[in-house]
Length: 280
Image 1 (cartoon, rainbow, N blue to C red):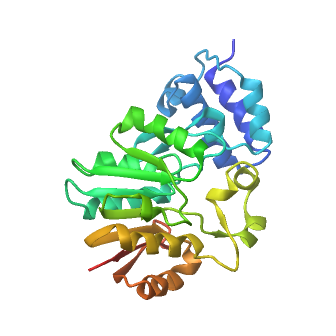
Image 2 (image 1 turned 90 degrees about the horizontal axis):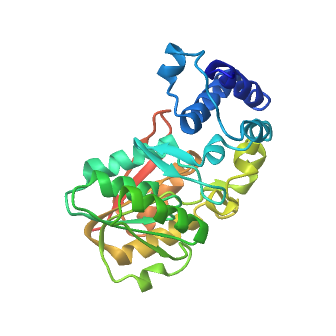
């Protein structure tokens, strides 16, 4: 018989080959919860109850090779919901929840919203549920991402509309709708920062959703801002998740592109990670 405690210990020891002890413990508990249906409270109350998890050895091997726990279990939590994820799709981050909360707090009922570079669909779907009677559309260039986004929407917000488009192209030319809000969490990490990042990101998550050339760090932001000017209603708002090092450059770029009332907002680590700009 293998107990809950023993399985957590096996997974934790495997994860500790890559991660610090506290993070390794959290990873082990996520796997037991998602794949074994056992919550953290249940682990505390009945740690010696028998538990069986399929593919336990494979999971330990995956952990030792830095494979992200979200890809191991095929799911990620975001805004109190569970989203399907797989390799080829960016894993939703907690800081992006703050961007969603900011947008939802400033959006009126029946708003029209466009999410550019949607990935798993987490922003679009969360806003569709948070903003009453909203119309939400989302685009991405990745067919893998769109497949997952549509699966997530089918369960969580079936009215969200998805379509394939390149954020670096003239995507506005093929969209007839006008929007009150446009939001994007595009690629923004300079390629040179790769060497400072952990293998669970660099070896598994899609480069196309993460990195930009060092010489053009605002590449996606500028293209999206120019497209957004053609798609936003009067008084519409453009929101971005941003790289903290480029907060000042982002503010200047948005002013240069004709936006007004540019506002920065810090995340829970007190870093400037979100920005909003408006058009008249």
